[in-house]
Amino acid sequence: MRNRADACCSLFPLFKERKAMTKTAGFPREAVSPLLYWYDSEARDLPWRREPTPYRIWISEIMLQQTRVSAVIPYYLRFLERFPDPSALSRAEEDALRKAWEGLGYYSRVRNLQRAARILVDSYGGELPADRDELIRLPGIGPYTAGAIASIAFGLPEPAVDGNVLRLYARVTADSSDLSAPKVRSRITEDLRGLYRDYPEDASRLTQSLMELGAVVCLPNGTPLCGNCPMRPFCRGCREGNPSRYPSRKEKKERRKEEKTILVLRSQGRIALRKRPESGLLAGLWELPAEDGVLSPEQITDRVRNMGGVLSGPPVCCGEATHVFTHVEWHMTGWAADLAVPCPDLTFADPAEIRERYCIPSAFQPFLNGKARG
Ligand code: SF4
Image (cartoon, rainbow, N blue to C red; front, side):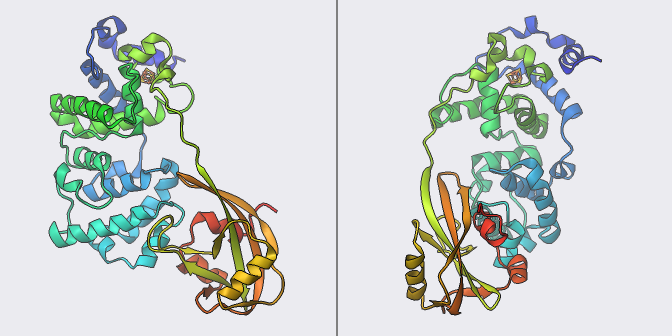
């Protein structure tokens, strides 16, 4: 059986290496046809690709930020069933919306979706505008998402430049610039914008093929699968022999580590919940009461007293868990206790109610489902 690299070369005889060696400082134009050809035959069948309306592309792109495709698919299907258009999204109850997002994390995304949906209903007749500059003014839509909606859904010549596309670009053009520098990103975006203008009919497929190749062939971690890649004859990084050296990597800043004490306070079979502040990490979500630092049982008893409650006995350690956010890591120790007098400002709910009505971030789940390390 032929391997995919052989198949590639025979599928694209006109694009063999010698011809492709011819210059171009930016993205090689001669790579576009093989790239689109590859996309048409190899692209994954993803739900948002079946009916790429602006609304569907918008929802999928927001969900896909920081989240894997396989994790997004069931959320995407359920979300569209419940909120099929901007109008339905604009009317959604806050708790129902958060519940539909529960598990995806980064809840500011869903808050921004609703804020933007309300603007669409009020000012755009309930439709997304076919204009990158107008899209970018909507809450939660940055240059990448605006480019994705503009090109994929509206066919406009606007690139969508995310980490996958930047990595692919750096390897294809053997560009060792620092990709985190805004100047470098602008230069790459401008070069790609020129590419789109050269292929005005192919904006949607161009965006999707670049994203797809970056996601499944020109992989972020480990070795890129150059043998399966339609760009291989045109790829400078590959020709140099070590494409993984692109993009050049800057030392990552270490995440801040924070200790937390998590309280599982019970009263008549119900568990105490508290709403987090409306700004900052996990803003506005429900939590198990969390205190900064590692508290002793005596300190926990005092804290509960300060909250107006009284414990019926000493708290018992119920395990540890770690949760990693983008810039911070929580190292949590859980303590369970029964309340003789419930704290008046906490909300109490039984486990079934919590599952159905309350959106609790995944950081707290190990203490709710008994999966904290013993
Ligand atoms: S040939 Fe290799 S390095 Fe170049 S774009 Fe393809 S997978 Fe990436």
